[in-house]
Image 1: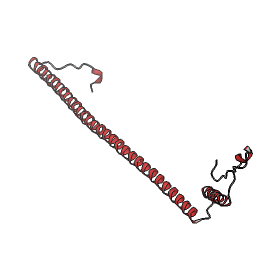
Image 2: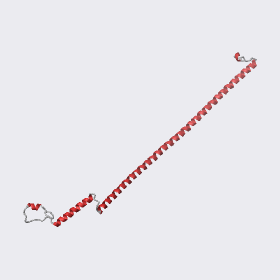
Image 3: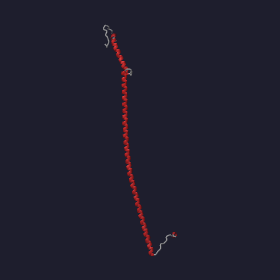
Image 4: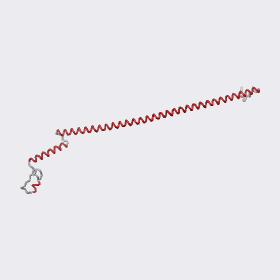
Amino acid sequence: MFMGETSDNNSNSSDSEDVPHYSYTENNKLLKYQEAATSSARKDTGDLDGPLARLEAEKKRALIKAWEESEKTKIDNRAYKMQFAVGLWEDSKKASVEAKLKKNAEKMERKKAEYFEKMQNKIAEIHRMAEEKRAGIEAQRGKGLLKIEDTAENFRTRGYSPKKILSCFSA
């Protein structure tokens, strides 16, 4: 038997046992239960008439706002970390390039100094060669003068006068 059913002992019919019979008070309880179920269903579907429904809606809005703020903060923190990482990357790359620049500048300075020294050595070598040539010219001049002096001495001792080689050029 079902709850709230009344059994009819006098009736032997099977039809009467299958249909439940409710008393008036049991029907009122059932109606109140159904109304409570439908009113809670209305609250779940978004009917915001009651103060509890408004409170639930406020809670939902606050929860959504807190979630939104939390997500925004996460995104901001992630962006800050990424910007910081980019800044570190930039600084390290700048330092690397500046180190290469400094290294190349030092290398160029060394090459410049070496080239300057090489050119100074070339200048010194040219000067040395010029001095040698001057000395050679001076030696030839000295030999030529000695030869002329010897020839002049021979002319004096022998009494010859020098011959003109090209008479057409003499005055």
